[in-house]
Image 1 (cartoon, rainbow over the protein chains, first blue to last red):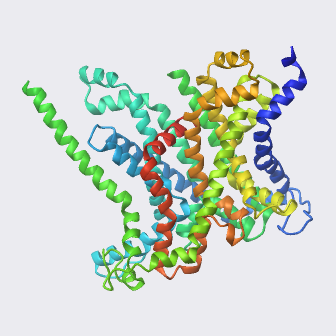
Image 2 (image 1 turned 180 degrees about the horizontal axis):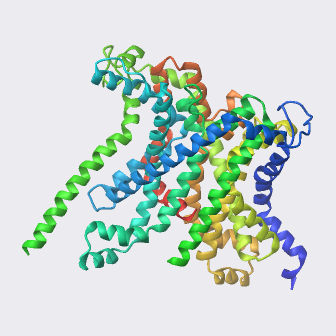
Image 3 (image 1 turned 90 degrees about the vertical axis):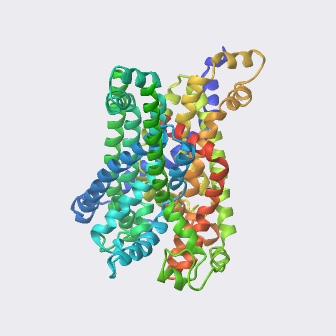
Length: 292
Length: 286
């Protein structure tokens, strides 16, 4: 039959998948491979020539103390944010599925921060911290209170607060879907058997929502780890570069200091971390399937 | 009887407590937005003396809003964002649904390779691709600073995730018998896809539209690298530039921030149900 010929297969594939394949290769695949090549050159961003420097960029990246400090800071920020985002999101989801009046309204309301881009959110919060916090603080204490954004610990605290506020509503929706997927019969059965509300939650509902937890935790880890927009608009890495996250460091290394090769090498290290997180997710997800 | 009444009463008080907690949390959640809204209508001096007051000493001012609109070139910027978001979203959907169709229905090697590469690429953070993209498309081909470049790049980045979602939808929801029937009636594969399969994918099309349109509308990093000319700026870039230029005129900044948020908030007012549903199903499947 006609359908088994090579010509048919090639034309079908190109007709349907051609555009997607070309765009995917042009924007993701080729730049990824080319980026790998760039890490072995000392390109300055302008010149045509890209001198080959072997592993010099990797050596420089490993010796770039600021980068490792930024990575460590990002790790701390990510751990704290992920824990808080998920606790807040879970509680919100519990409250908006408890059957109270207007729960759809609250669901929609808590989601609002996700509609708006990180740049705008960062500037909105910058105003809140610099002006409203200062006004409230000064009124309460009677003296002049400095903005939390102007102290090194404060800037990190602000970033975490904004992150929790930004993502809690989004993760809440996933937990809401999880709560709704647990059948009411099972909870009722547990309650009839004498379980308290908390025991039913701990031993029936939460284990059955396992996939929601896996999804939310990994979504929040991957998002937090490459935070850039809010970092740029809210703190811009200040004060004294104390809030420069890994993604911002990579951006500055490449586009501000014009060390493209070293910046790309540092970006690849970021990629390796993301890949490890991604693979872990797939593995944990698969193990969950077997258990369920 | 007595016991169940007691239980009902307990439930009722519990619900009242829940509602009070929810209202407090809700106010905390929208507090930053409220603060922007009240300060848009105040003078610079009033914002500085008391950002929390509903009305300042100098009273209500309507000047910030039109002034910011003018300085930001709002309608131009809004139009740019709209063109880029709409074109990228449509292109992503067409291209991904087509690719997913051929991948699901044939076990050819090329299909398997393409799909595996797409799935694997989802862990690549944008930071790894930004330098090579600027290097290739700025340095070698010199095609940055065009709207179409950004639209095609947006599509290229989101095609993996969208293909993955369409793949799942076609695999589980489109019966093969339907396609076979269409082909017996004389449809080519191309016709079968557009007349039978594509219309049946509408729930997934809605989900992908919502997720990708929101991502494109709010994206900052990629557009800021691609679009360097002022007349091409999108809303996030214009906001960033505006803040840099007018950061001392806080009333103007408030107006610009509100302007940047309004289009999507207005849209949310009408499409709230669909957006919440789309984001949920997108996140759970992804």
